[in-house]
Image 1 (tube, rainbow, N blue to C red):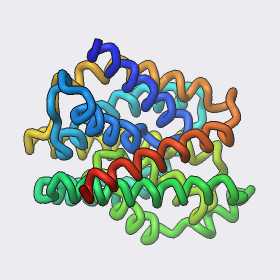
Image 2: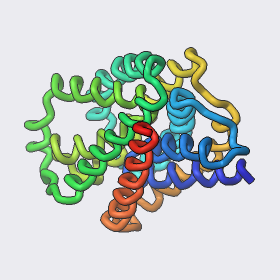
Image 3: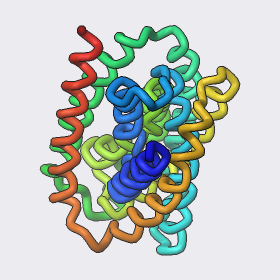
Length: 259
């Protein structure tokens, strides 16, 4: 029963992650932490293991989604590589830092991060992107992209969220790229940040293999499903649901972190 619940969790988190370019870790990590406290029969998992397992699972989400977006010819790899130059070292630093963060502090910080992400998603819904390639070139500065990538990579490695949930609002609000460019680009970034973060967490022994094996099948098909739904479902409605879920999970994590 628990195995099938985890398969479903992997599918749902990957579908939302691929559909909106979020990666899925921002939903997967808090739910994993919640399951270990709410269901006695579920194996206990530490915050570091939740982060490492989430990043490992997101490799398969990213591969599935990027493969689908590549077939649809929607990937802008040239722009994504600019951010990866900062994300990779940032992810390694964040992963190293996660080992010294206490459980209560982890939940508290993660809760506040989710509230920030919810606010960024609100900005996404109310920001009109630039229309032309010329304007995008003027806005995108290499140094800024590398700096942003380092910050996002650090938070990705620390919390196991892949980085897409942060890159999406940054690319839309700050760099003002069109949505059709942003979502596939974010999933490409998630793939490589997850590879780096999961490798570092693997060395540190932070991957819970029982959870990973249960989550991967759902994550693979969820990544495909999200990419397929990307141009078939209105994202505004999904963003409303996502924001509600994020706020509820954030409040739960903050409560657990404080008490």
